[in-house]
Length: 409
Image 1 (cartoon, helix red, strand yellow):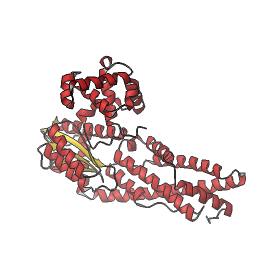
Image 2 (spheres, rainbow, N blue to C red):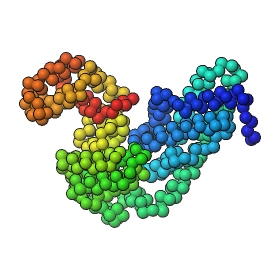
Image 3 (tube, helix red, strand yellow):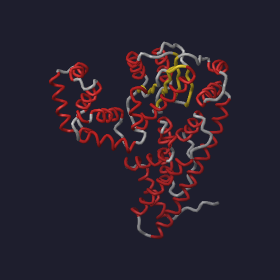
């Protein structure tokens, strides 16, 4: 088809609309991102992939808006920049064989509804609205179709590249083990270069920051292995910025936490979720799945903490499996204390963890016992029910708060 440019008046309107798209309000982007991630739980539960999809969608908005400021209403070429094409790489490295179209189609729908609102704010003339919306509808649809086709083609290229490397064999072997496939243990050990007997501790090491130096992932993996007494842990490239790691042995949690804190501090943007130590092939699987559960909890709560041990978050992960119910639970049990002084919240959390023993809690917090008691009295003034009557629920709610980031939507 030969493209027919819209009228000059409609070109002006489209340019104004595109300028607004290029400067979106934060709440509009939040709505856009939430809708896209809600359309694909698989993406939403993977913090690295979710961040990549959000970056890709923002890049597509900017790409379409820029093109229409420059040449309003003209066909927009596909976005073949680094953001959408990185999605292909992430999907292939996770073994995803089909592109999750729903996330992009939902994003297209949200963007289209917002564009219609902008159009009605710019003009009330029926003829102008009809022409403008018709041109923009065709433009957005064709742009998204072409961009998705480009990503699908890149997926094929990435898959061909990946299957030619030794990584494919290790990734395939791990996938078979995690699925419980009847692969002989000796064969799996030979392919992985890692013994599957004895005690294993698993970790997921990743970064959501596109500017992270990926060598930091390997440094943290090495530090993790050292905390378990394993100088050569098994590391599998789950995606470009995620490592699945298994170390032989069990770490000392206190010393291990200190070592990993130093390692993550020197590797900006790198985070680690750790499973419990467990024995044998079943332990190899179970520790990994618990590490994945820990990572997903951190993503779900938008936690900013760099390190999480499954043993510390098991109950929080269970409680927050349904985020809306978890938020209700926290508000119901904490009331005004939910937004109280963090130091006061930490005092109550430690007091309950010390089995409500004031002397032990005061020693743990390096406080005078009378100072502790005054803080507890202040907490009782803010709590819906006295702490003595509801200490367990309050402690769980405070643990949820401790792991929850600023963004709780």
